[in-house]
Image (tube, rainbow, N blue to C red):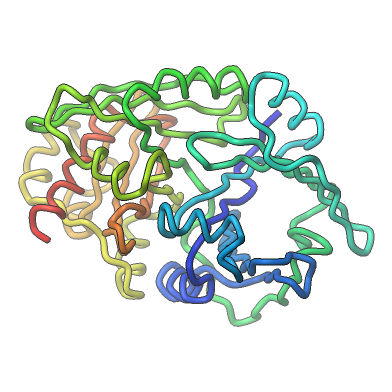
Amino acid sequence: MIGSVDHVEFYVGDAQQSAFYLCTAFGFRVCGQAGPETGQPGRRSLLLRQGGIDLVLTSALSSEDPVAAYVARHGDGVANIAFEVSDAAKAFATAVERGATPVEEPVTHSRCGTEVVTAAVLGFGDVAHRFVQRAGGRDEFLPGVMDMIADDPDQVTGLMHTVDHAAICLPTGQLRPTVAFYEKVFGFSQIFEEFIEVGEQAMDSKVVQSPSGQVTFTLIEPVTDRKPGQIDDFLARHGGAGVQHLALLVDDIVAAVPALESRGVKFLRTPDAYYTELAERLGSPELSIEDLRRTNVLVDQDHWGQVFQIFTQSLHVRKTFFWEVIDRHGARTFGSGNIKALYEAVAREKATA
């Protein structure tokens, strides 16, 4: 059974440069490194950690490495969303039996009595899913391959603690087959769907989630009989299906946003009219409207509670990938205005650029 997101691996042109930004602006810490000297030929990786979030940044050391081909096609982006499992070999065999394309056969990594088993299959587009079986804790991320770096005693406590969800853009016609694929291969269930119209543009969205409730994917495709929009732009600039954004969970978004802004993170702005109409649309939010207005945070709700969110501006050279900061007050899914709010926020950024 799939547990949580074990880690997310990005393929990037310069791992050191990407790590500098994520550490400086978002408060991650470099706590591991791998390369030819640790048994990883052709590429170099850095492990970044904050709370329960592990990010791996990998760069190619030669043009022949597949990482280089990925970056040439997509630019920097998510290449692997890894799942925590109790038995990686069994999870791999089951996924392949159900129709997944194998990427990495099961391998056992060990050092000083610590063992980690990994295997991988293809997910959507050319993004893979690595199954990770850990016998102990996370002190050794990938024993024998990743050299760990000692904790900094002066490290400030991070703001983010979990990968809440990933938003994935798909070419037209791939939404339903992708939902069916995740249901059949990984045992996910569809928990939400929405048809979004913004002006002359429209898109379809469905949300799938693992049985554990700890892995959630928002799947989005453009509607072709409407005017091309930002999902079409993403697909063209990214070069096919890919992760548009990752959402990181915080406990106090009103405090987190100014803290992140002070470190250099730039968020999308929300028009004042949004907050003027908020009480009429949702009643009284659990966080004050003035605090939400001051921080540009959006709010929505489902049957269980409210969800607060804000999206960063994209610093990607292709204007594709960006981040979301999210704070859940009981909400398990997304309200009916969740994805539309993102769509409109990105459209505003584009209009004012």
